[in-house]
Image (cartoon, rainbow, N blue to C red):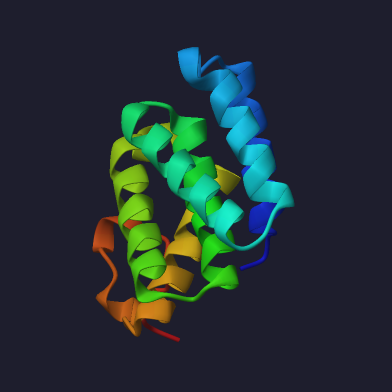
Amino acid sequence: MNFDPAIAAQQALQQAKECSELGKFAEDILETEEIFSTDQGPEAKAAYETLQEFGEQLPQAKWFQEFLIYITWQQVTEGPLARYFQQGLDASDRFLEQFCKEIEGTPTRQHILAIRESFQGGLGIETQDAIPEHEEDAFQGGD
């Protein structure tokens, strides 16, 4: 990846806040994110899980869903468990399917594709097996 997921997460959360995507959960999300960002161990893990639960309640919140993908990568780096890699891959696929038209040609699309590839790698999935519609910019043979 040629970007920092932690910085990208903060930028996406800021956008979610500015666009009022967080709704009635805004204060709770921001408090929980603070715990996730500053603590380690069980407290950070619990905060991560709580943020994911908020994400389930806000499936249309594009910036917040992007934030969740990036923090899943952060969670992978803390504890590289297969379930986090799978969770990240699933979230990336949902994001790309749901928001493909909105993010076409943007750095967000490139970031999500790169992090998705990293989640695949963590699961031992060859990138050639990637979902074709998400990989349309991939090299297509020849010289």
